[in-house]
Length: 298
Ligand code: SF4
Image (cartoon, rainbow, N blue to C red; front, side, top):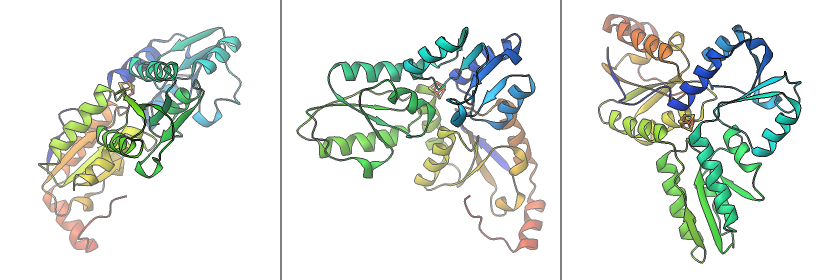
């Protein structure tokens, strides 16, 4: 089977840098990683096996910390940073500079007395970190949550991994329902997210099925799969090559490949190799054995 790769996919510089810092860290067993360094099970296992104390995102508040704490690329609020500093002797901060940019933008908008509207996933750690430092912040996940907030000044930003398409649709709706308000929009979508989304749009013009590689907890991986569907392409999200099943490709001669910003290069290569090895014979046999005609998107 022919595999067409998206021009941009996989690890972004923010995640690469965070991983490089972790891999260079001396005495990992003395370090607590404060949440998932990367939303990817392969990397999480690697870090655990090197001795890092890995704390789930839901357990961050209750866990007893070591003397050294590593803050992930998703960042945390200043309030939480101060609490950590009071408890720990050393902070290893791997916050991505493009996440910092979202924090700074919201602080600026708040200082202008604007009601801050953040387009993103309410439960995502990046969003929680931003919200915790603001007096008031409305998190909008989709169009149906947008109302007339009756505020004279609005400031709109996005989580760094929000799709440009969703951000644009939300912004248009905010302007439409808040005609009386002065609305300032700051584009905080990070460049790697934008590049991967644009590359996916180009890819979807050449294929009808895309394999999206990435962790089930990865926001941008999920968004890549969702965007495929919006573009009229089928999408299947897998975390590793082991999940690929030949019968998915019974009627497919060309398949697209993309991956989220937290997917390691090795995982992408394994998936690409396995896809290329799925032969027409294998696909036909599965088709005959299972009577399979169309796959269901999971
Ligand atoms: S996805 Fe964007 S904001 Fe998040 S770590 Fe990567 S570069 Fe930074």
